[in-house]
Image (tube, rainbow, N blue to C red; front, side, top):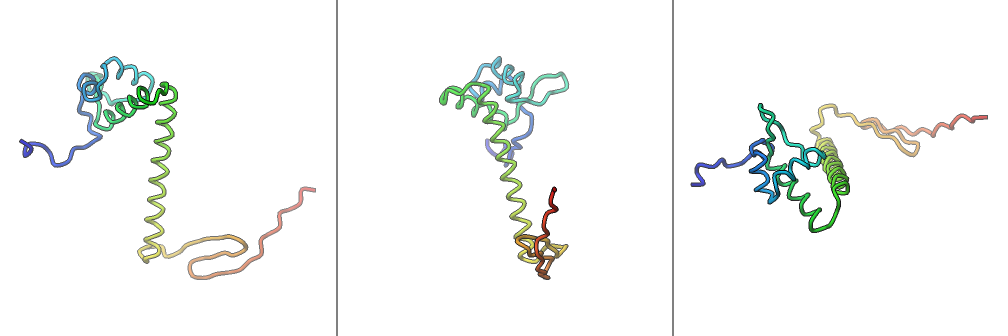
Length: 141
């Protein structure tokens, strides 16, 4: 039977109706509609304006349920937690991209071959190091 299933599923494919997503998340369909109105889980829309949920949406619904029922957090608190988690995920992505850039530069795969860094009176351009004294700020008097 598993030979008829795809090897990997797209977690962002809008596959599930409200009823099916509610069953998967062990919630009432009206709860999902309420979360949509509040902006906690906003599904995509089908041509007939019907809601379509992804596997990622279902996982988010389950996460909301844990925060609400097991942790006792109200919906506004959950909204803020989800917002902060999204910001943290974005920051992790930026750090990963920066690490890749630094590693590529250290290995020598960087096509530009130039780096600019400055600090404590030293300016470093590529392989050349020039020492400069910091400029004094103009006095406001």
